[in-house]
Every structure is written in C-alpha cells, then in structure tokens.
Length: 636
Image (cartoon, rainbow, N blue to C red; front, side):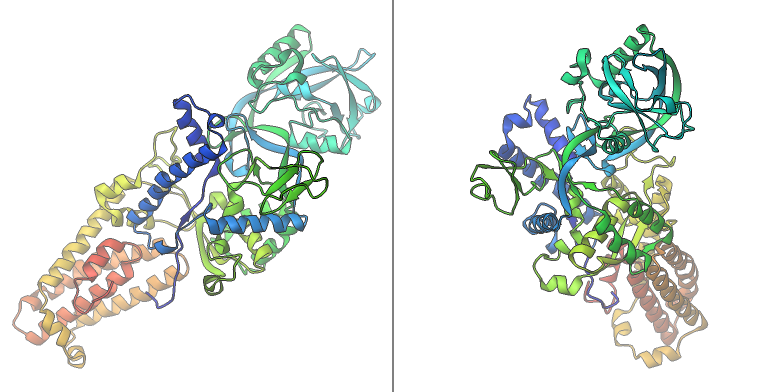
C-alpha cells in the first residue's frame, strides 16, 4: 500500500519427527509397523498425510487473512528445496564442515531417533541422589559417589577426582571395583570435577553423559554403551539385560542396598530432558551420527549481529542469540527416520569407503564393491535453515533471488531464536555471503487466560477456526494485535475478542451511516477547491486528527510497535470519528445548506476511506468489504 513490491512467501516444513510419529501411531492401530510396509510404501503414506494436514495449515492461514503470495507456496521437501539441501550437504562435506563421528546425542527411546535441542524440553523434576560406595581394590577404603541415574553405573569406566583434592590424592592411579559388575576401573584426576560439589568424586560413564564423554576422551577410557535403542539394558549389563532402564534402576538400587554399598538416598530436584513429541525422558547416548562443525560457521553469523547489519526487535533478544552462538556445539544433523531428506552418503559393503554424492555411484571407487545409501535422514532444521534463499530458487541464480534477496523482515517467536534464526543467519553467510534479512521481529507466545502455555496435556488449546466462526477473523486478529508489545507473551481472553467484535460492528454501522447519507454523484463530481472553502472547524479538526493518526501509525509500524498502532486506530475510529465527528455532522447532513452538506459528505468519505486503508493490515476482511463500496474506489 506504500507502493513497494512486497513479498510474503508462504510455506511449511516437513516436521520429520512429529509427522513420522503420527503415521507410525496410525499404522499401529491397524497392527502394522513401518518396517512391515517398507521404506517406499511408508513414504507414500507420509505424502498422503502431508497432503491432508499440510493443506489444513495453509487453509487456516488463509482463513486468518494472511496476505501471502499463494502462487509461490513452498514445502521443505519439494524439488527446489531438496536440490538446495543436497548442494549444501555436499558442499559442507567437501569443505570439511560436515563429518561423521561418535558423539553423545539426545536419544528418544520411544521415537528411536536422535533429537535436537529444540525437540528436548527440560522440566524440573523431583528425583534423588543415590550415594554409592565404590571399593578400592585390595584395600578397606572406598570412594563415595552420588548419581541421579544409577542404571548408568553398568557402563562406568572410571571414577574422576580433582587433582587438587587432598582427600583423594593418594588414590589417583589406583583401581576400584565397580559394584555389581565386579569389574576393575581406574581412579583418574581431572579438573572437570568440582571440589565443592557432592562428594568430590564423579563416576565416569563416557557412553551415557556428554561431560563424561569429554573426560573419557582425555583419559583414553573405553566407552561401552549399555543400553539398546528402546531404552532397555543390553548384553553388557549382565544380569540386568533386557530390563527397561527405570526397571533396572530399581533392581540396581535394591542390589546395592542388599550388598551394603548404598550409603544414602537424598531428595534432589533437577532438570530432566523430555522428548517434545512423546514426553519420553531423553537418554544421552554415544552414537555414530553426522555432525556440522559449528565454530567456523558461527563467527561470520555473530559478526553481522554485533555490527547491527541484522537487528533484533526488541534488541534484548540479541543476548539469547549471542549466548547460544558463542557457546555453540557441533550440530547433530542425522535422524533415524524415513520421512525427510535422506543423507546423500553411500557406504561400500566390502571396504570402509564413504562416498557423498547426489546420485548413487555404480560401484565403490576404491574397491569396486557394492554401495548402500545411508538409512538416516537430515534434521528438519537443516532444510529450514536455507529457507530465505532456497525458496527464491537458489542454488540457481534466479530473477527472484536477485530481486528479493536479502529479505527485509523475519517475524518469529523467541523460542526458536537458536534453532531457526541462528541457523538461517549462518547458512546465509556461508552460502550467500550476505545476510538473510535485516530485522528479526520477535513476538511472544499466546497463552491461555491464566497465563499457561497452551498444550494438549492441559487441554487448554484454542482453535483459531472456532474463534473465527464465532467472532470473525478480524476480531481475532485485532485481539491479538492490541495490547501486544514486541517479545512479550499475551493472554487469550474471550471477553477481549468480544470487545474487538463490537469494534468491528461499530465500524460497520458507522460506514453504513456514511453511505446511507451520501449523494455519490455529487461527491464524485465535486470541485475540490470549492469543497475546501466550505470546510467547517469540525471538518478541519477531524482531517487534522486523521493526518496525525496516519503519521503516528506509520511511525509505529516502521518501529514494529503494532500494538500501539492498533490502539491509536481504535481510539481514533471509536471516539473521534464515530462518537464525535459523525455526531457533529448529523445536523448538516439532515439540513438544507447544500454546500455544507456536501463538505460533510466528502470529509466523511475521505476520512473513512483513508482509515480503512490504515486499518486494513490489521482487519483485512471488513476493511476490504467497506472500501469496495466507497465512491472512487474501483480496485482491491
């Protein structure tokens, strides 16, 4: 409406974990597993699912009045995005930015896949510290350790103490007998151990804890993994083999107590990671996965925000960005799923060759053996990270890419700053050598009337389509905009939606009044110079107030203060235009002074037309309907 060529490009991502979980769940009701179907048939089901639910999302956006360019709709698994993903994976691999290795990852025993930080939700849970005696070999001494996960002791390969700790200096280098497993493990000295915390001694389970993994690497310790993918204890767990991890925990604690090795149990509140999709407790596990080296990618992405080439609105959210990017770890990008971009890596069945390529080579380039493609897919965020340029045609140098890139504004929630915003920035800097957008406008979360996050478990979610059916999309939109300040959460209150619906009625009734009292022919043919000479003080006042509101609303929108812009429009329309000006001009509209009547009519039309334009981005449906019935407006 300001004359710029503006693009709002709509799209959806393939949500690999959530979608696959839903399809697996639906199949299970018919007694079928995804392995019964096989990969190809399963993917056919997944595309059917996408066609049903993907269109639901887009239809909701349309119903809400999102003014996207629907002809450009994109999906992260479409041909264009898939081409971009393959190009980036191969490019990163050839540059040494992607590697395959064994690291500790977040593992969901129910979804049976690695999951990223974003899919891990941490909750404060009441747990325990179990204090256990580890006997020193050939001695009456023992070391007391404390753990929140006794089942992991089956995979202990050392106990670490701080080298400065006088209590344990004489024991460093000696061995302990691992309780229940009757296995010897060393006592190592490592600065990682906090002298002040707990007993000052820490059990080291390199395959089941990220910090222990680092200690294990430093001391060249073995790294036995004692759990299966489904969270049960494997053959390395001795008599506990086959038990679920929490079942094994109870049995281990009981056995320790019977052997006199359990010192005490203390209550302990701690943060426990859960799978966002199925709420299963996450298991940190050593696994061979694909990773992206993040340090070289993070530096340019940090610089553009520090130099304010990219600005966060509100600015305080840049701290979250800096905190994550400055402490960034390598990104685990492989997922043990079928729905998604399959990793373009091929393994030789005869030698240890790994070939990364777009198309499957005929045979191994090293030994001529057969090749098998990696079974895993890429993290959904890998493709979403390329969104600002992959959707405009990259890696091809398209006209859209030249014209619209870099983009202007990203609007998103604060909960995905690290997972999406950061990844788009470093992906753009690496692949485009240019920022992806100039502003990151952060909004809060819509909560329920009590301030709680909406969730399926609480049953407090609100379907926007139900609100629209009851009050209309304009009332819902205006409700979400008013009283909203950048970055802050807001409560959804039904009474407020009703008052926004009343506001829509007020606008409708005022517009009907204006149109019922118009001589359209006279208004359209009026000489504007004569009209200006017949303006009264009331006309000049409302025109002056209207011009001020135009300036203020424009200024607010430029600064992303949408809530303030909406409030100013509400006050102007309800109070000044409807309650004051319309009431003031009624005697003139019903009077005999033709010149004064026409001046009132023209002023009413001008202010109403302009106000509908101002309000249109917030309440598109009612403003469009009114606008198209006003004289002199022949276009949308």
